[in-house]
Length: 121
Length: 107
Image 1: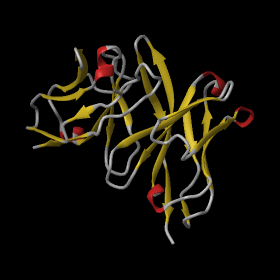
Image 2 (image 1 turned 90 degrees about the vertical axis):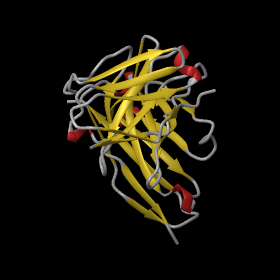
Image 3 (image 1 turned 135 degrees about the vertical axis):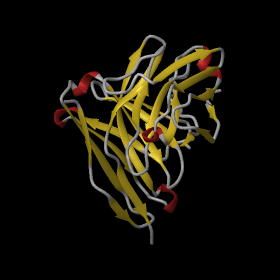
Image 4 (image 1 turned 90 degrees about the horizontal axis):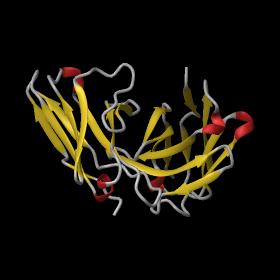
């Protein structure tokens, strides 16, 4: 069974750093892109960026470029999303999902269960 | 532009047909994918590519596309279909933006 399992909920203070993870299993982790998606409380889905674990090629949404860092460790089939200095506005649920490409299309499946990040003083 | 636009809310009577739309320039070149999200749950893929359903998705869900508009149609809506629905599409710049989402109410 293809699965993405994310790390647990985090509570942090503004200015702190954070790295959350997404571990893939049941498939060749290095052969598929992984995406990260933010969902702020009561709001919609926002695409943040993608990484290809095979060579760590990374693409960022213009909205998130410079705000977060996406990385991967293919030796342990894990992708990461990290912040160097959190803000209260980073409070959100963060999802990872495997990205497929087809003819004239791309789609995210499956999704991780989500990691809730709360930033509060 | 990589923006995708959806109606914020749509309602449908139980057993009737509803169409949820998504508009954007990228849809002239690429197919949309569609996701269902119920409260407190992760999104689930329901339609991808030209009109493909993942295993386990009922055949009452279908997708179509014309010009700059992609549509998700639910034929014979059920109570369990009440959820938020999001479209997504790749664009020529390598971005994968989501639409703002549509809240579907089944009356």
